[in-house]
Length: 330
Length: 258
Image (cartoon, rainbow over all chains, first blue to last red; front, side, top):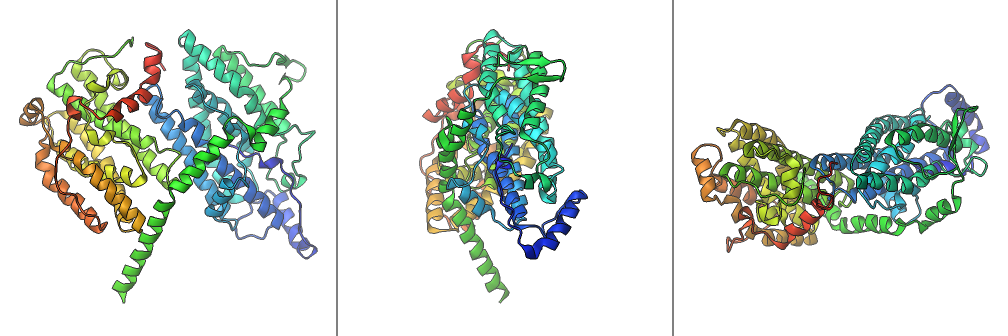
């Protein structure tokens, strides 16, 4: 899915002793070389990546919840199988993103603890509820569509393990996006009730999806360092505009109306202009006050707590097996 | 066009195919309830994978049921429009997930039965069933391995995991007898070489479960009173709730295509 940590300020704490190494590092970045786990890197580069990759991983895992909410109620066996497979893909994305973060010297356990303690964040979008089946279509089409806009540039991110993870993630996300759009198309061409369901989902998900790209450039805290390090390659507003330009014609093809009276095509710029985003809502959701923040965290904490005895059992059994093997070898 | 609940013609072959399909769908549905809530991400993946296998098996069997009945019904008609008394799955698979131990032990008890069952059914004189069995067997072999390994880990893990696994085994044991029942109608299919006699698999099933339980340091319960009725549509209260989730959209919007 997507991480909003691109928008946070990082302090570049590279010391004078590292100045020569930092200069060599920047030369490699500028030459579009990939940085690998054992390569020298500035501490702030490492910290930025750990935060960004882990928040991305957390978003994948929390993102399983709103869609998982409809697995048991999917309207056909084909849709049920596709939805399980999709949510399972998100889990897989989370796993290989945690693995990518682990190449930077942290453990999955540490990162999960930070999520569960509330220290680490995940994408704001997953704090909205899935109320009808159309929401599953809207998430695939819009949320995954927005995620792709963000993630395609990350396939060229300077950090090798992250860029390679993104290449695989993007392939799967683009399949999800087509799947979501196909759900919407089926609803839009279905009964009046189904079309109304699709419209309602679009009304609820449109603005939160635009918020996924983060604050406007004018207010953005996004660091110059991330750009210099070629972690972030496009600004929030540029990506948001790209998403709007791609999505508006898709909505029109569905025969649905975007919930924005200010939306208009500017012939001169060849872009769709859109209305004011409610940044107060965005800030409130980030602050923990979205409709589902508490439910999402409660679900993750419950899964972790309820699984503790299972994880302990696996460790205890592995220790016994090692002891038995050692005794057998002695 | 879907309308209300459907009633299917109760021919022996149709009833038999639907029973096997219902086993797979109901157990797959149960496993899918774990998605996003597993004890570790690896198990979210594994349980979802098995759910997908089982739902895939159910789809193949329901599609075949449609051919057998010849009334123009597709897989979704059978899954979404039969009421609880029309479902013919065994009671074991509809039992709630409970904790992870209960889910794993349920999977062990069922997989230890169904894996040899599919293998034997590959010799069915019914070519479609033989083909479905051949595909399903590859999947159930993995399900059995996964459930066996976890049963051993839990049983021989910590005191807590041992107690939970033992409790799951004790509570689910009374649902195992039904796996081996054969209705009068099904007897005819067995005689015709279409279905197989599950009684012939009982000793093998018991040996698998006993071996896993032994390594898991779990005690097999004594064979007491066995619950049954699922194959005849007399279910536990749990199935109705499962179906009200599963069938909700098809019931709320009759005739809509999704």
